[in-house]
Image (cartoon, rainbow, N blue to C red; front, side, top):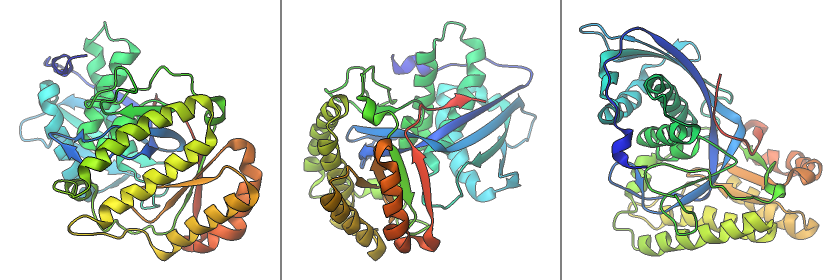
Length: 356
């Protein structure tokens, strides 16, 4: 699909209302570093989650002279602090849907998980908003199939938040050009037509909340630190190699290799931040304590449990559903003591966004 095919401009009259639910996701191969307009310097692959999602409803109506581009409610309350990010997103997508300038958007959004709970909500939020906009546009594309619709949704979501490109389908999504996956590209994420091993179909993700506070470094600033980073080239090469190895592990059901790759990627992400200029240490003592206990528990029990990290202090605990009872007992007895107010969120792999 060419980029030109994403451009659409038809003056529209009347009103339209739509509502979408989009999940958060956890990257296995991490995207860190970008170029151009929200394009990734390396490919990534992620699990789409099931229970952590954003629901967004948008009403489109003809825009009157002098009227603001949008109104926004979060949890049924006005939240002006979100306006700059939404306005930036709308400005970025206008070239691909100029007719949007003729409309006022009334946006109402809410999360299934507590805001500032340690789950990155920008991916699910921007994906849900993008899908509402593409759903509005779809009225004038009778020839669109599901793949074209979702590709456009991912394309637009990327312009709001890079990782939002992967919050469209499931159970796994690949974003960024890679020899390992045909049709992969930098402009939108794809759900590859691959027979993933059944053990990963209902994989669990328990998010251990170490710190609910605001991140020390924004994602945009963090990605910018890869420009001129002394290990950037090696990191991008590593990500390409790891993506191919993940594909093998995920199709063969090689949980041992999956564990090794997942933890290597998590620690490499933080190593990049700790060796950038300026340098950031986002893990906290409780993060390290949890990691050590996970590794000790795995060694002692031989249970296939591993951790992943985003750009923060919280820990994603990944494991097969069949081991859930033993691992939840371990979480409650050993790990919650390192969590802020003992908090954690139980989730699992999901199938992507859906219209409500």
